Image 1 (spheres, one colour):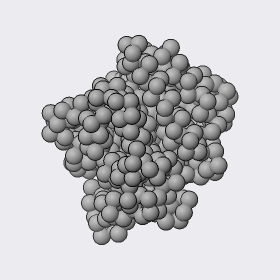
Image 2 (tube, rainbow, N blue to C red; image 1 turned 30 degrees about the horizontal axis):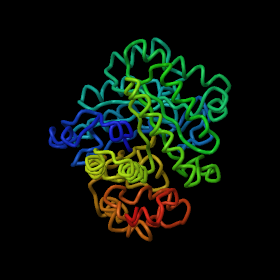
Image 3 (cartoon, helix red, strand yellow; image 1 turned 45 degrees about the vertical axis):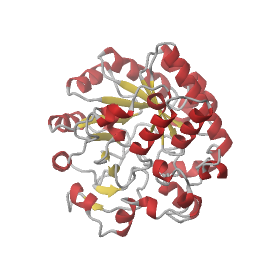
Image 4 (cartoon, rainbow, N blue to C red; image 1 turned 60 degrees about the horizontal axis):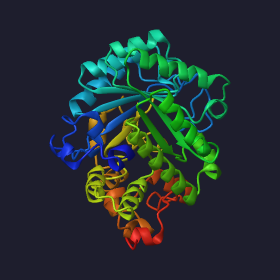
Length: 395
């Protein structure tokens, strides 16, 4: 996760994170990525059920879901363990988490235990009443997936009217003062929508947007040919950076982030250096604090059946199940060779990753994407768009 607005527009300084000792338990949410202890943010896919059928769904969600979902009691036990372990954020996802009847109660329980609770949703089920309910329990944030304006988004969602329903959900959140933002997964079918999305967040006064790079997992595995080329990715990043700056210059400091391709960090730094930006050195310091990809260390996933994964995309490999052992125990058990290597992945990456000047900033990028394309977990991430000269630092 690369905070474009934080870094390029200077809304965060290295001293901001240092003031809190870089401890995840004391850092405010907008600084968590700069923590030193890297207590994992946990994604809990509370259900496989969903009212939509998105063409790029990493979870392969379906209408009826699975019968093996963790019960409410098992979920509360999971939350108890996560709280004791010091997990700073629990992200409720799915499928569609709001399909699960006890979602609000589980999120409320997490808040009571001192965990920041957020949800990732398609937004179509957020009625006025549901928005007020989520606000009342102390939910920190609602991330709503939109992958373009109406026609494009509805094509991605597999349902005509999904955009309008999500827009109503956004407005319902805003009406009760519940922080809401967008999630946009970039690919060739929607990259031209980015300018319109920036216009949309300005018109609707939406305070946050995350631009996700495509990960080849779940139904997203079918879209490899639709992923952006390296040149297309660079152009998209430049556009995102430019539009973020323009918003800030207008006095509209929208929080803009890119997610799931840590080459974005060096790319942003190198651009700032070329531009003679005096903050470039501070940005590099923050990027080193961020540490790049944190699958298996700073982010983890619990599936609907209790399986523990390195992240929400790595569903084909489980380290154990919370029905049998607590998450905290599984997460710290280095007897699993993959878990041990993920805790120090920079020592194991191969090829151009192993000699890259920016390894401390990127940490080798996405291992699951490398495995999907090459069959080798430690091969270079094919989505890294840095040139050979850039990875050598000869620019």
